[in-house]
Image (cartoon, rainbow over all chains, first blue to last red; front, side, top):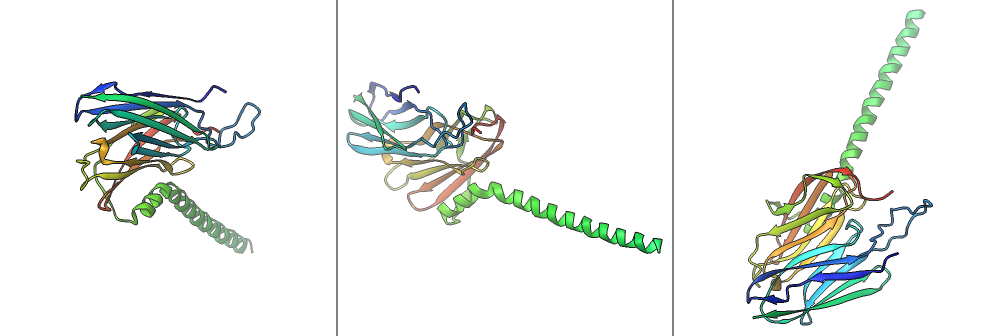
Length: 108
Length: 153
């Protein structure tokens, strides 16, 4: 199976009060527990169940995911730029693993 | 004698017919009850205090592949401390489970919108339920026609 890899696109620079769009994607199979493998066996449920975004340590956006979300979950959301800082993204897997990523943004 | 027999048969057939009508009525009732899972959930979350308004829910009218259906929404809100959207629920009434996603918003975001991709197993309604900070709820729905379902199996 391919490696689980988070990706994200955050503008490096933004103007004050500008509304930017942040796009994220994580490579993850999102097994809903209903799919079958080649031998007809059920693949156990394994999804990303939580996605959290913090900006300078404060939570700004969160999402709870269910099996109805597609493979390789893509999430895009807006953010109002006020000051420079760092975004911390965190995806939580059903097996307890956490995948993180951080991106910096300059606001002037 | 022969006539009597005929009579019995016809009575039996009428009974059978009535039974068939009753069972088919029951069946349609059952079939009608199933897609309301999402609506039930909405009632549960909002405690039936929900208004149907026109929120901007962007889903394709026809989805060729139910595995990757782009969903985006944009809710008109100033997103200030006194007036903002706290939570947005995404539900679908034809999937094995009605819940699709729950988004938690904060005032730092400036606007209330998001985009994601979801699975749709068949042609169905997609619901959007928004919870405001003052405890009000608003919902909207949109029908998506699905050519190839996307829930495995």
